[in-house]
Length: 282
Ligand SMILES: Nc1nc2c(ncn2[C@@H]2O[C@H](COP(=O)(O)OP(=O)(O)O)[C@@H](O)[C@H]2O)c(=O)[nH]1
Ligand SMILES: [Mg+2]
Image (cartoon, rainbow, N blue to C red; front, side, top):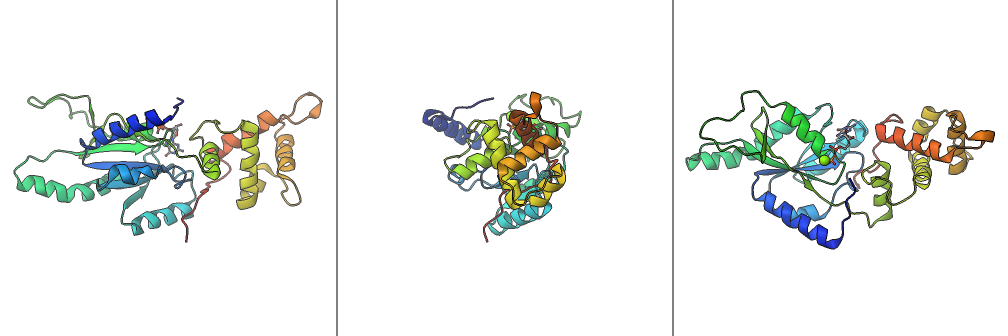
Protein backbone atom coordinates (compact mmCIF):
# COMPACT_ATOMS: atom_id res chain seq x y z
CA UNK A 1 0.00 0.00 0.00
CA UNK A 2 1.42 3.32 -1.00
CA UNK A 3 -0.24 6.41 0.37
CA UNK A 4 0.55 9.78 -1.01
CA UNK A 5 0.03 12.30 1.71
CA UNK A 6 -0.73 15.44 -0.19
CA UNK A 7 -2.22 18.26 1.93
CA UNK A 8 -5.80 17.63 0.83
CA UNK A 9 -5.50 14.00 1.80
CA UNK A 10 -4.09 14.92 5.20
CA UNK A 11 -7.01 17.25 5.83
CA UNK A 12 -9.55 14.59 4.85
CA UNK A 13 -7.80 11.98 6.98
CA UNK A 14 -7.79 14.29 9.95
CA UNK A 15 -11.48 15.02 9.56
CA UNK A 16 -12.33 11.36 9.25
CA UNK A 17 -10.32 10.55 12.38
CA UNK A 18 -12.05 13.35 14.27
CA UNK A 19 -15.40 11.91 13.25
CA UNK A 20 -14.44 8.42 14.40
CA UNK A 21 -13.24 9.83 17.70
CA UNK A 22 -16.76 10.82 18.64
CA UNK A 23 -17.72 7.13 18.51
CA UNK A 24 -15.10 5.80 20.91
CA UNK A 25 -14.28 6.00 24.60
CA UNK A 26 -10.55 5.56 24.30
CA UNK A 27 -7.81 5.66 21.70
CA UNK A 28 -4.96 3.24 21.24
CA UNK A 29 -2.04 5.24 19.91
CA UNK A 30 0.22 2.71 18.27
CA UNK A 31 3.89 3.53 17.85
CA UNK A 32 6.96 1.49 16.94
CA UNK A 33 9.04 0.64 20.02
CA UNK A 34 12.23 0.84 17.97
CA UNK A 35 11.56 4.42 16.88
CA UNK A 36 9.04 5.98 19.27
CA UNK A 37 9.86 9.51 18.11
CA UNK A 38 9.91 8.94 14.37
CA UNK A 39 6.81 6.74 14.33
CA UNK A 40 4.74 9.30 16.17
CA UNK A 41 2.91 12.06 14.39
CA UNK A 42 3.01 15.11 16.69
CA UNK A 43 -0.34 16.23 15.31
CA UNK A 44 -1.95 13.48 17.35
CA UNK A 45 -1.94 15.55 20.56
CA UNK A 46 -3.83 18.20 18.71
CA UNK A 47 -6.35 15.77 17.23
CA UNK A 48 -6.96 13.86 20.46
CA UNK A 49 -7.28 16.73 22.90
CA UNK A 50 -8.52 15.23 26.17
CA UNK A 51 -9.59 11.91 24.71
CA UNK A 52 -8.40 9.13 27.02
CA UNK A 53 -5.59 7.28 25.33
CA UNK A 54 -3.14 4.48 25.80
CA UNK A 55 0.26 4.74 24.17
CA UNK A 56 1.14 1.32 22.79
CA UNK A 57 4.76 0.53 22.03
CA UNK A 58 4.31 -2.20 19.45
CA UNK A 59 6.98 -4.49 17.99
CA UNK A 60 8.61 -4.41 21.40
CA UNK A 61 9.98 -7.86 20.55
CA UNK A 62 12.25 -6.14 18.03
CA UNK A 63 13.35 -3.35 20.37
CA UNK A 64 15.83 -3.62 23.23
CA UNK A 65 14.46 -4.43 26.68
CA UNK A 66 16.31 -1.45 28.08
CA UNK A 67 14.76 0.84 25.46
CA UNK A 68 11.30 -0.53 26.15
CA UNK A 69 11.70 0.16 29.84
CA UNK A 70 12.98 3.71 29.32
CA UNK A 71 10.17 4.57 26.93
CA UNK A 72 7.55 3.19 29.27
CA UNK A 73 8.97 5.38 32.03
CA UNK A 74 9.05 8.35 29.70
CA UNK A 75 5.37 8.17 28.77
CA UNK A 76 4.36 7.24 32.31
CA UNK A 77 6.06 10.40 33.60
CA UNK A 78 4.13 12.39 31.03
CA UNK A 79 0.97 11.15 32.72
CA UNK A 80 0.01 8.80 29.90
CA UNK A 81 -0.95 5.17 30.20
CA UNK A 82 1.57 3.12 28.27
CA UNK A 83 2.21 -0.53 27.49
CA UNK A 84 4.74 -2.52 25.49
CA UNK A 85 3.22 -5.20 23.30
CA UNK A 86 4.02 -7.58 20.51
CA UNK A 87 0.85 -7.60 18.46
CA UNK A 88 1.96 -10.65 16.47
CA UNK A 89 2.47 -13.00 19.41
CA UNK A 90 -0.02 -11.31 21.68
CA UNK A 91 2.53 -10.46 24.34
CA UNK A 92 1.32 -7.57 26.48
CA UNK A 93 -2.25 -7.74 25.22
CA UNK A 94 -3.64 -8.73 28.60
CA UNK A 95 -1.98 -5.74 30.15
CA UNK A 96 -3.42 -3.52 27.43
CA UNK A 97 -6.89 -4.78 28.26
CA UNK A 98 -6.35 -4.18 31.97
CA UNK A 99 -5.22 -0.62 31.26
CA UNK A 100 -8.24 -0.03 29.04
CA UNK A 101 -10.53 -1.09 31.86
CA UNK A 102 -8.76 1.16 34.34
CA UNK A 103 -8.97 4.11 32.00
CA UNK A 104 -12.64 3.53 31.34
CA UNK A 105 -13.63 2.87 34.95
CA UNK A 106 -14.53 6.45 35.83
CA UNK A 107 -16.59 6.98 32.76
CA UNK A 108 -18.38 3.71 33.29
CA UNK A 109 -19.38 4.67 36.80
CA UNK A 110 -20.83 7.89 35.48
CA UNK A 111 -22.88 5.99 32.94
CA UNK A 112 -24.14 3.60 35.57
CA UNK A 113 -25.09 6.45 37.89
CA UNK A 114 -27.29 7.79 35.14
CA UNK A 115 -28.88 4.40 34.74
CA UNK A 116 -27.32 3.64 31.37
CA UNK A 117 -26.74 -0.05 30.97
CA UNK A 118 -23.04 -0.55 30.79
CA UNK A 119 -21.62 -1.59 27.47
CA UNK A 120 -18.16 -2.66 26.38
CA UNK A 121 -15.41 -0.11 26.08
CA UNK A 122 -15.15 1.26 22.59
CA UNK A 123 -11.70 1.91 21.26
CA UNK A 124 -10.06 2.90 18.03
CA UNK A 125 -6.53 2.27 16.89
CA UNK A 126 -4.46 5.10 15.50
CA UNK A 127 -1.02 4.99 13.95
CA UNK A 128 1.17 5.42 10.90
CA UNK A 129 1.26 2.77 8.14
CA UNK A 130 2.93 -0.55 8.99
CA UNK A 131 3.06 0.07 12.72
CA UNK A 132 0.87 -3.00 13.30
CA UNK A 133 -2.70 -1.72 13.42
CA UNK A 134 -4.22 -4.59 11.45
CA UNK A 135 -2.17 -7.13 13.36
CA UNK A 136 -3.40 -5.76 16.67
CA UNK A 137 -7.01 -5.83 15.48
CA UNK A 138 -6.61 -9.45 14.40
CA UNK A 139 -4.98 -10.49 17.63
CA UNK A 140 -7.67 -8.81 19.72
CA UNK A 141 -10.41 -10.24 17.50
CA UNK A 142 -9.05 -13.75 17.99
CA UNK A 143 -9.84 -13.36 21.64
CA UNK A 144 -13.44 -13.11 20.57
CA UNK A 145 -15.62 -15.77 22.11
CA UNK A 146 -18.11 -17.79 20.08
CA UNK A 147 -21.11 -16.51 21.94
CA UNK A 148 -20.72 -12.80 21.23
CA UNK A 149 -23.05 -13.35 18.28
CA UNK A 150 -26.22 -11.44 17.63
CA UNK A 151 -28.52 -11.24 20.55
CA UNK A 152 -32.10 -10.27 19.86
CA UNK A 153 -32.71 -6.60 20.35
CA UNK A 154 -29.13 -5.63 19.80
CA UNK A 155 -28.51 -3.81 16.60
CA UNK A 156 -26.17 -5.68 14.37
CA UNK A 157 -23.35 -3.60 13.15
CA UNK A 158 -20.20 -4.35 11.30
CA UNK A 159 -18.58 -1.27 12.63
CA UNK A 160 -17.50 -2.88 15.88
CA UNK A 161 -15.17 -5.80 16.25
CA UNK A 162 -16.06 -7.63 19.40
CA UNK A 163 -13.46 -9.23 21.63
CA UNK A 164 -13.74 -11.68 24.46
CA UNK A 165 -12.80 -8.95 26.89
CA UNK A 166 -14.90 -5.95 27.69
CA UNK A 167 -13.68 -4.19 24.59
CA UNK A 168 -14.96 -3.35 21.13
CA UNK A 169 -12.79 -2.01 18.37
CA UNK A 170 -13.74 0.25 15.53
CA UNK A 171 -13.16 -1.95 12.51
CA UNK A 172 -11.17 0.61 10.55
CA UNK A 173 -8.11 2.01 12.26
CA UNK A 174 -7.10 5.63 11.84
CA UNK A 175 -4.06 5.93 9.62
CA UNK A 176 -1.83 8.83 10.50
CA UNK A 177 0.69 10.10 8.01
CA UNK A 178 4.32 9.79 9.02
CA UNK A 179 6.11 13.04 9.49
CA UNK A 180 9.36 12.80 7.64
CA UNK A 181 10.50 16.32 6.99
CA UNK A 182 13.46 15.56 9.25
CA UNK A 183 16.16 13.56 7.49
CA UNK A 184 16.88 11.23 10.40
CA UNK A 185 13.18 10.57 10.91
CA UNK A 186 12.92 9.60 7.25
CA UNK A 187 15.85 7.23 7.62
CA UNK A 188 14.44 5.63 10.76
CA UNK A 189 11.09 5.09 9.07
CA UNK A 190 12.82 3.54 6.07
CA UNK A 191 15.16 1.34 8.15
CA UNK A 192 12.20 -0.18 9.98
CA UNK A 193 10.12 -0.51 6.82
CA UNK A 194 7.45 1.98 7.84
CA UNK A 195 7.97 3.72 4.53
CA UNK A 196 8.92 1.30 1.85
CA UNK A 197 12.19 2.50 0.43
CA UNK A 198 10.57 5.68 -0.79
CA UNK A 199 13.12 8.20 0.27
CA UNK A 200 16.30 6.48 -0.83
CA UNK A 201 17.32 3.64 -3.08
CA UNK A 202 17.88 0.41 -1.16
CA UNK A 203 21.65 0.42 -1.51
CA UNK A 204 22.09 3.90 -0.08
CA UNK A 205 19.60 3.03 2.63
CA UNK A 206 21.48 -0.15 3.53
CA UNK A 207 24.75 1.73 3.64
CA UNK A 208 23.17 4.27 6.00
CA UNK A 209 21.92 1.44 8.17
CA UNK A 210 25.38 -0.13 8.29
CA UNK A 211 26.75 3.26 9.32
CA UNK A 212 24.16 3.56 12.10
CA UNK A 213 24.84 0.05 13.34
CA UNK A 214 28.63 0.42 13.16
CA UNK A 215 28.44 3.64 15.18
CA UNK A 216 25.91 2.63 17.79
CA UNK A 217 25.77 -1.17 17.88
CA UNK A 218 29.20 -2.29 16.63
CA UNK A 219 29.15 -5.55 18.56
CA UNK A 220 25.83 -6.65 17.12
CA UNK A 221 27.03 -5.93 13.60
CA UNK A 222 30.33 -7.71 14.21
CA UNK A 223 28.80 -10.81 15.67
CA UNK A 224 25.97 -11.13 13.16
CA UNK A 225 28.22 -10.88 10.10
CA UNK A 226 31.57 -11.84 11.54
CA UNK A 227 33.16 -8.66 10.19
CA UNK A 228 35.82 -6.29 11.46
CA UNK A 229 34.68 -2.71 11.83
CA UNK A 230 37.67 -0.77 13.06
CA UNK A 231 39.59 1.23 10.43
CA UNK A 232 37.07 0.45 7.72
CA UNK A 233 34.80 2.71 5.74
CA UNK A 234 31.11 1.86 5.85
CA UNK A 235 31.31 0.79 2.21
CA UNK A 236 34.16 -1.59 3.06
CA UNK A 237 32.09 -3.07 5.87
CA UNK A 238 29.24 -3.55 3.42
CA UNK A 239 31.57 -5.26 0.97
CA UNK A 240 32.93 -7.57 3.62
CA UNK A 241 29.39 -8.54 4.62
CA UNK A 242 28.78 -9.24 0.93
CA UNK A 243 31.78 -11.53 0.68
CA UNK A 244 30.94 -13.31 3.93
CA UNK A 245 27.41 -13.92 2.68
CA UNK A 246 28.34 -14.85 -0.86
CA UNK A 247 26.56 -11.81 -2.28
CA UNK A 248 28.70 -11.75 -5.39
CA UNK A 249 28.19 -11.42 -9.10
CA UNK A 250 30.25 -13.16 -11.77
CA UNK A 251 33.91 -12.34 -11.51
CA UNK A 252 33.72 -12.06 -7.73
CA UNK A 253 32.42 -8.50 -7.67
CA UNK A 254 30.15 -7.54 -4.79
CA UNK A 255 26.44 -7.79 -5.52
CA UNK A 256 25.47 -4.55 -3.79
CA UNK A 257 21.80 -5.04 -4.35
CA UNK A 258 21.86 -8.47 -2.74
CA UNK A 259 23.91 -7.46 0.27
CA UNK A 260 21.64 -4.45 0.78
CA UNK A 261 18.60 -6.68 0.84
CA UNK A 262 20.25 -9.03 3.32
CA UNK A 263 21.13 -6.29 5.80
CA UNK A 264 17.80 -4.47 5.54
CA UNK A 265 15.73 -7.64 5.78
CA UNK A 266 17.71 -8.99 8.70
CA UNK A 267 17.49 -5.70 10.54
CA UNK A 268 13.72 -5.54 10.02
CA UNK A 269 13.26 -9.09 11.22
CA UNK A 270 15.30 -8.37 14.32
CA UNK A 271 17.91 -11.05 13.64
CA UNK A 272 20.80 -8.60 13.94
CA UNK A 273 19.55 -8.04 17.45
CA UNK A 274 16.86 -6.26 19.39
CA UNK A 275 17.65 -2.67 18.52
CA UNK A 276 16.07 0.55 19.71
CA UNK A 277 17.18 3.37 17.45
CA UNK A 278 15.75 6.24 19.46
CA UNK A 279 15.97 6.86 23.19
CA UNK A 280 14.13 9.47 25.23
CA UNK A 281 16.08 12.64 25.81
CA UNK A 282 17.52 13.02 29.31
N1 LIG B 1 7.90 -8.59 15.03
C1 LIG B 1 6.72 -7.98 15.01
N2 LIG B 1 6.11 -7.71 13.84
C2 LIG B 1 4.91 -7.10 13.86
C3 LIG B 1 4.28 -6.73 15.06
N3 LIG B 1 3.10 -6.15 14.74
C4 LIG B 1 3.02 -6.15 13.41
N4 LIG B 1 4.10 -6.72 12.85
C5 LIG B 1 4.38 -6.87 11.41
O1 LIG B 1 4.47 -5.56 10.85
C6 LIG B 1 3.96 -5.54 9.53
C7 LIG B 1 2.89 -4.46 9.39
O2 LIG B 1 1.78 -4.80 10.21
P1 LIG B 1 0.30 -4.32 9.87
O3 LIG B 1 -0.58 -4.85 10.96
O4 LIG B 1 -0.06 -4.69 8.48
O5 LIG B 1 0.45 -2.74 9.98
P2 LIG B 1 -0.66 -1.60 9.67
O6 LIG B 1 -0.27 -0.99 8.36
O7 LIG B 1 -0.48 -0.60 10.78
O8 LIG B 1 -2.00 -2.23 9.67
C8 LIG B 1 3.44 -6.95 9.26
O9 LIG B 1 4.43 -7.65 8.56
C9 LIG B 1 3.27 -7.53 10.65
O10 LIG B 1 3.41 -8.93 10.67
C10 LIG B 1 4.96 -7.01 16.30
O11 LIG B 1 4.51 -6.69 17.40
N5 LIG B 1 6.16 -7.65 16.21
MG1 LIG C 1 -3.37 -2.29 8.06
